[in-house]
Length: 116
Length: 111
Image (cartoon, rainbow over all chains, first blue to last red; front, side):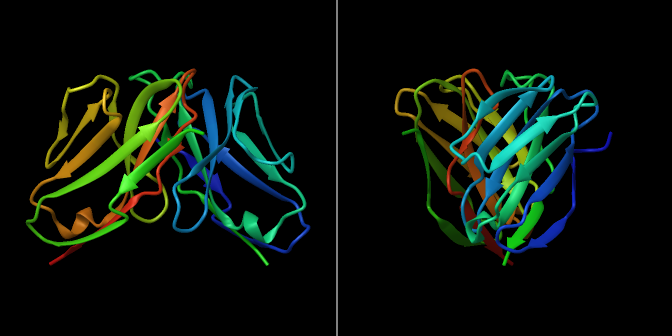
């Protein structure tokens, strides 16, 4: 089975622009979570979606938004980019998003966003 | 505010050494503690711990959780150069799958 896939791999934008990142979960997984990892730090939770509904949101401004599609893939949008948004954006999928011992989150390779 | 703290920040050892990585946490609604290995980009899952005092093992890696003292350790025995990576500890809170990560421990294993 293919793992979690993300696109694009790398992206360079300038301040004020908008960006859309994409994630396809593992087949059979219905929950997708997004994380931001700034260089040298651990990932920070942004959103979780399950069955197209937002289930959780981290401490990020409203410039960050996301959605999940009927095929369970997901997009993360960031508006009005700031230099501080430069980071690795990771997507993780799990079967149900409940955190049960049988419901581990598996991470994709990430999208490296650079804001100039 | 919920917090996960890992120590040491970085570690350099030689092949064959044994290492112990530490993770302490303060969260409101603990569900589980997870360990991931991050080599280049995607963190790869190692262990999920939910019960105190029960060791999880996978080859040369093992981990244990102490829910009373709010910490976990990850042990790696007979280290190899392929163990070089950042090791991330994360805590999951109810209702689940919204992980709070520590800052990671960078392990370098020299030949």
